[in-house]
Image 1 (spheres, rainbow, N blue to C red):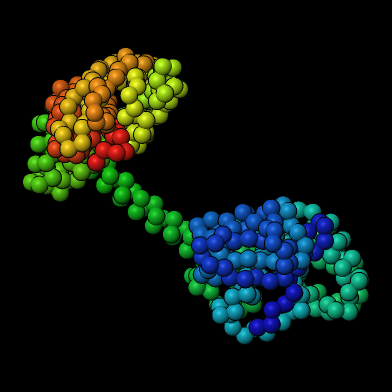
Image 2: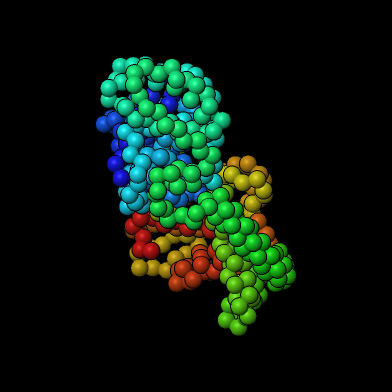
Length: 429
């Protein structure tokens, strides 16, 4: 089929669709002025007009992304949609077949909905006047022009065409649906004959599937809720050893729903652990001491990773600052241990604080004992919002028995408690 010139009617003058280029599906569609690097302001509307599920172009061509070049900018409105649709149908030549219609040019205006309905537009008189000026200048070039619009606009177009300059043969096509354009030119598309019916059928199918899914989720949700009641009870009572055993049993011996219920409850506890850890800001301060070269200026480090700054091993006084960034009260345990190279970790400082919402406190200053070899401190902070007796036994093993650290840290996090652990960079992890 010979592709005609396609003009989009605008009040500023007819805009020709110069070219359409298929782009990678991952790229969004854009409208540009011919050969420019800048996309037009309505490109986001064009992308939505092309791409499923909002657009229609992908539905009738099977491709989701294009660059379309225009002879002049279009900055607003939606009456460009009919011309863009016709141009895309001609561009997808693999979807067309031979047709007896071979108009040299098409002049069109109209909006198109996602279901393929063509909608009448306004300001026809202004659009025609600017088009008539073009015809007066180039009447020899365009002897056969097809005018396409909604039937409500077509009568006005016919009356205005009678005033056109030159010997131009106008034909008219009134369309209220994209299917009428497809039928007129003889296009073949991948879509069912009736776009509107296909869309309604798809919507009805989706509603049915969503209803089934929602009903299933409600049934499973009620069962999961009943299943999780004993788990929440153990959690609220602070019986975390029993809770761990119950979760382990459900994972290994439970039914399909029980196993999945345990899995999602563990995910909830892990999420709570991360949230608690992030709710507490822990800062290490090196307290200034003018009499010591190493301690001649104050230093601060927010403990957000598992590594303490190198100056944490200096022979200086230090202070821990705690800040509650959450909207609830927090129980905080802080321990500072010391470790000599190749020697057992020894608990050195331990403190407990209850932090109200938004509260900031500084703990008492402390110094690490000094001998011939450096001390490398480790800071371990437990953050709780529930009874924590069971968890404190695991916490004690972290700060007193180095070999238990990784196992106990994992156990604390899986129980829904926050933990912040940081060592000097010179200490082996």
